[in-house]
Image 1 (cartoon, rainbow, N blue to C red):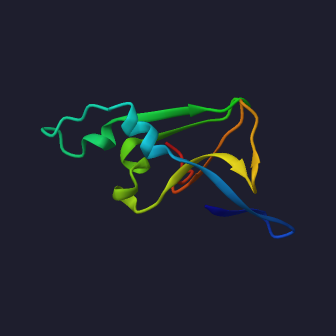
Image 2: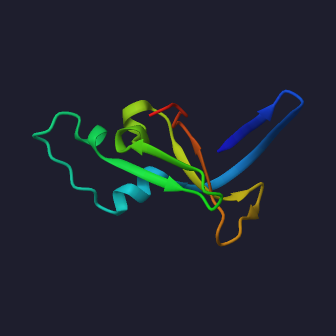
Length: 98
């Protein structure tokens, strides 16, 4: 995935390599209940970074089939591996108050 970030004076474009977060969620075999309408919207993933910043997203938001956007947990930027405690989550989850 190629991603751009930053402000007008300091704009950065990089190529990231990683794993779709949805693949990680599916590997954990989340149990859904088809009798509950929109069940994936009722289940959440909480992620907290080493800097203490956290985010919460419904599983529906992480499903590329739901919004047509990919959320990627990256382990490499421009061919350079991150350290063992580093990762970037980028993609379709929008920052909005919850």
